[in-house]
Image (cartoon, rainbow, N blue to C red; front, side, top):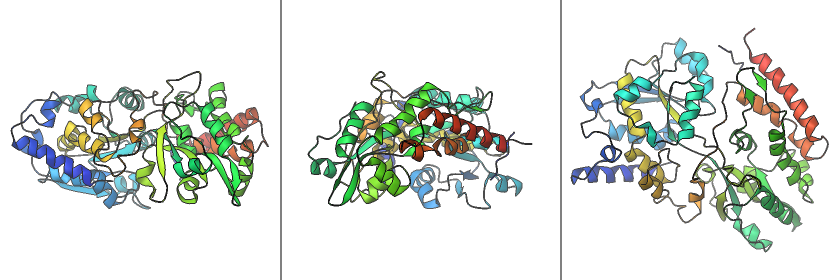
Length: 438
């Protein structure tokens, strides 16, 4: 035990289409997934109120758009209550107040943090009881949860994310360069960065920006930030050095260091989306759904690979739903999760442009069909395989801050890579120690 200091109309269209299929006597989604044709167990259960919680801070509107509206349409006999995480409404606050929580949902990075509250529940038997076929799911996501759960299954993946490389077509056109393509190496992208980092019309443009946290969190080398057995940082090794050296190589472009000094930081999503002075950005593959990209003439390609590892795809970055140990309605909650991982819901997920978690060819083939950005190369994020998800711990967020603290002086050439690794290791070790129970 440790102590911390401390979007879619397309869903409904697809779901209605599924209902029409059922009315015409065609096989329904569950049957197509190899599940029995018997009526859902939930339909025979007493109507209840199910409370859903996440530390994400999502507004009720955002939750409803992504999950809530579809759940209420599928299960009208139940009341679904979503509690938004706010100051005074964290896990410990709700548990202390005796607030029921039936289902929890968190990203893979956040899920370990809930273990300190002891409301996780091994769903293995419920999964068998409700006949959920986990073999249809992306295996790295299940492996990651089993690692977090100590071999158990505290939750199942429902939606996914990963990394992609976005580019501003107008800037490539402006400087007369060919657009990026799928399968580029970091060396090729860094070469483009040199060609695109220049001053024009009094504006300092740079070729490449990075979403810093995600660059480390979902790295294709599957590097964990710390050893879960020794509770020590892992940063002082050659693989971490390889990642950090991408920053120093970016800054070799003439004018790039001036941009860092101007920002007192590394160019990232804001520079690409709002300032439009950054030609490419390595960021989450759903950035076009979470940022207002209406004024950017953008497209996207696969995340760069290392030259000596051409299959080094990034990790997946799933969001999981789990049944709470304090729920009095675990069967009803499990049946809802069964629906969230069904072909029916996953088809709606895919059609809307969100990455699904099941490997059905019909679901994958429908990706982004209903999305307004379907003419973009968004299917590039459908990697044939993902790197194994790095071991996650409750300390990762704080350790990430320690690892990133010296990026600016390092990129400016004021610190060599070995000094960066050593000082970051020392900072992270102090952070971990301060978080432990005394």
